[in-house]
Length: 255
Ligand code: NDP
Ligand code: 8X3
Image (cartoon, rainbow, N blue to C red):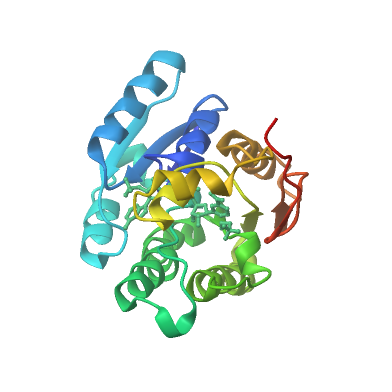
């Protein structure tokens, strides 16, 4: 029998790759994000390439009422959520704290922390009732170590790390697995979003080395969800081979 997975932030990057890999491995997938046209193209791709059923739900995860409406609208098999992948997230801006932009800070806090909490609050009671389920939070190396001008993004990912540990304590009594996956640099839309559409600056982040791909992270998620019932992957940090720390990356000079 197929399980139901909700993947937040499935319109791009890690979330999109995760939805695709889960759809190929016995999951029916609820895909979410704000850009409905991106969701629809993913629906087509999953329907044409796999046996999976797919349900697109477009909402802004920062809006608790929109999240509630989407989750309360799940019925029949879609309400039996076995896996929640809390992936939607972003960095906005890269400024020292004394030059920080309050609106950027709020976007990161509202998405990366509050959004994750809103959806977890609505999905986890069903898992508790059924006595099974798995929640995977996408943290970051930025939640393990700080870097210059990372400040609020770092803080949100440290919060994801702390929340993951706390959620595991709260949910272990009910047989629910809670996992954090912390990637290093992954080439997605992440840096384009961080630099507010400046592609040149975004491309520089990945110059001269091979970063992780969204698929590399999706494969780690698949590994975590395919362990036997008695095994939980608590915490996984995945880096590109060339990245020793957030700001130590071995780059080749261009030929
Ligand atoms: P992308 O920018 O490629 O994807 C981000 C996803 O999050 C999109 O689907 C976007 O959908 C969704 N999202 C953002 N804001 C909202 C919102 N308000 N409501 C609903 N969905 C939202 O980035 P990545 O795939 O790289 O990022 C995924 C996760 O991985 C994030 O949590 C990020 O912090 C984390 N991460 C990324 C790393 C990297 O180097 N790329 C490294 C470590 C962690 P839409 O815009 O359509 O709403
Ligand atoms: C994204 C990785 O190092 O750019 O979470 O913050 S980093």
